[in-house]
Image 1 (cartoon, each protein chain N blue to C red):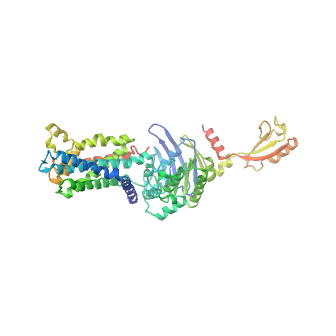
Image 2 (spheres, rainbow over the protein chains, first blue to last red; image 1 turned 180 degrees about the horizontal axis):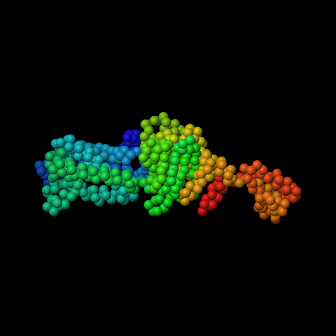
Image 3 (cartoon, rainbow over the protein chains, first blue to last red; image 1 turned 90 degrees about the vertical axis):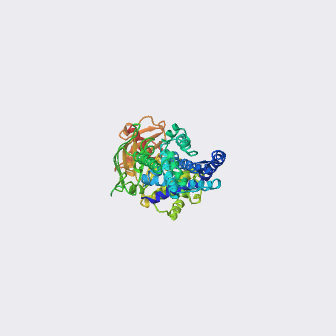
Amino acid sequence: MNRYAVAAIYKFEMARTKRTIFQSIISPVISTSLYFVVFGSAIGSRITEIDGVSYGAFIVPGLIMLSLLTQSISNASFGIYFPKFTGTIYELLSAPVSSFEVLLGYVGAAATKSIILALIILATAHFFVPLEIAHPFWMLFFLVMTAITFSLFGFIIGIWADNFEKLQVIPLIVITPLVFLGGTFYSVSMLPPFWQTVTQFNPVFYLISGFRWSFYEVADVSLVTSFFVMSGFLAFCLLAVTWIFKSGYQIKR
Amino acid sequence: MHPIIQITDVNKVYASGFKALDNINLAIKPAEVFALLGPNGAGKTTLISAICGIVNATSGQITVAGKDIVYDYRHTRRLIGLVPQELTTDAFETVWTTVSFSRGLFGKKPNPAFIEKTLRSLSLWDKKDSKMIELSGGMKRRVMIAKALSHEPAILFLDEPTAGVDVELRKDMWELVRQLRNDGVTIILTTHYIEEAEEIADRIGVIKNGQLILVEDKVALMNQLGKKQLILDLKDPLTDIPSDLADFNLQIQNEGMQLIYSYDTTKEHTGISALLQHLSAASIGFKDIKTDQSSLEDIFVSLVKEST
């Protein structure tokens, strides 16, 4: 294991967050706080509670997931795309590092950043709604697993993208709708039967459901189902990354 | 002496079908300076990229210090430092951060004292806290070299190291290359400046259309291919070569005012004395006399033309 290389990539990526603290941390925290104000206060006055949980508190896990997913993807995709764009990837390709070590550095840093952000948002939520976490271990488990899985997914997007538009297209037209339609702001049981069926095909729905269960023991699907869907997506991302490194797709000529 | 780099039957065909390397065979000796010359698109950068692992060779084998670059990439890549042709830098990083990053990436423990020594040797110490975006092109080039040297490599690839740099920096770089060679570092450089190869290389390789058309010791190459000429500035113009001088390899130039005698420096008798005697006998007077030897550039141009 080239641990110095892993540490170098990790530190390099974490340093980038420090330089872009407004974009990386402050901006997502402000956006999420606005969601609390708009959805929690405005809509919360109409919908008092869902499954015995106040509406303001009900949306907290979903909003954390929204930031966690989008930031994990954004951090990891930008992290690997930027060296490709500037050409500095030559150094990574000529260095004595394995694919696993590269992943550990980039995905580790991207996941760390989004976990820090999620914890800040969780702390911020305390200012707006009373919160309780019924299963802190499971809450952290979902947080870490989701951050790693979607950082891996972001890494794949960063490798695939050969321009800035491609870098943005999947997060904007796929991930954001999936998060919004995955039960961030509502329980799936509130939807008409047709849309309830459609939601079953949305992987993000299972993540939010599992994450919410760790807070309030309220879920649309069982914890086991959430766990397996997340593990399946993680396995898919790992397989895709393994193939990318073996084939040199979009990296080596 | 075992070669530090051994390239055997290496081919590279890109997805477009373009053959960038055509059956390359080459052995690089330890601690030599090897200059790879060739016109644009000849395959110089592809060859370097294949050795460094940036480009996958289509077939053939490359070993570095006896280890295969694919199966033992950890071992081989630790030995190599690369200064690419393009000034690809992390615009918002400081000089210190980017050089330290390179050292870590190549598996070396942090060593601030060594980084300081490297930056000082490249006159970069006072710029250590400057962001890359704030540096001039020449300074960026120095940082690229510092990055490549940060992990103390045994082999250094310099891909067009002095392209676009001023004369002073170019001479500094030549001095650095000499120092590194004295320290036992093997250096492979590609260049468009023949003067550069002539100045610092021990051996020369010429590549064209992906084929290595010549590999030779620089001095031997210049002796073998270098023609020497004796140039006589005549007092009076000459229209024809007199029949007495027909046995000499003479040419008339500059509207009959110059007589050029080409000779082989490796022969025991150059024929200069005999020529001068014959000129005197034929009453051909001259005002001035000088000699000229063909440069590596002339040799390179003639080689590339021949292979076309």
